[in-house]
Length: 259
Image 1: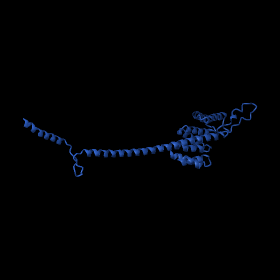
Image 2: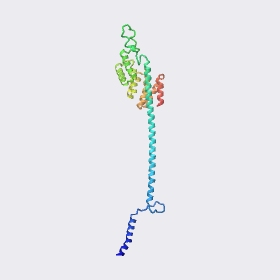
Image 3: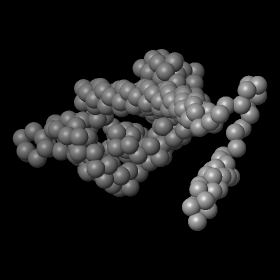
Image 4: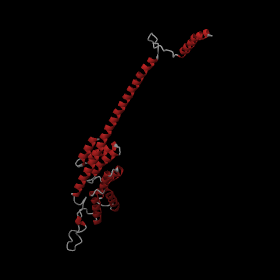
């Protein structure tokens, strides 16, 4: 019995070594000539190299995206500044035109005495004070009230007043002015399609009127807003060629230069 116990120790050792050898992970030869005794360091060293390469690629992609986004932001900022400048120019131009119309008698602001001075019996002379021979006192009053709303910057009510004027006085000598100022109101309210309709009325039906070159210039602006560059250039060239002595020529040339 004692001898059997001693002989079982080597047998147990062989069984343990056999089981260990069976569970060993095979060593992969990487072509270095010598086979490493333990392949665990090789696997641990290869993992950081792969992760570093992946991180480098991710960083490069992020940098490219940042550059692209920065370019888009700069482009949008430029367009925004350009739109703000154009909007400011339109309001300045509207103020300038309102001021010039106010200083022109019988057109934008007919004399206040046109409908009031005829009332006293002792002063019959001021009755025929209207400068437009085919304009009635009601015509002058309606136009004056509509234009007063423009001066007050009440564009919504001014648009209603000029629309009513065009409907009520289709034979008025101020009809071209009414169409023009209705277009200016729509343009100030950012309604380019409605503005286009009003300015086209002036250019088409009142080509010889003094507001025709201004209306043609405004059509160049409107079509630019509508995205029709060809039409915009067509009307700007119309101002330059057909109305070379008008004040709108300089504005048309400047707008073409900025396009």
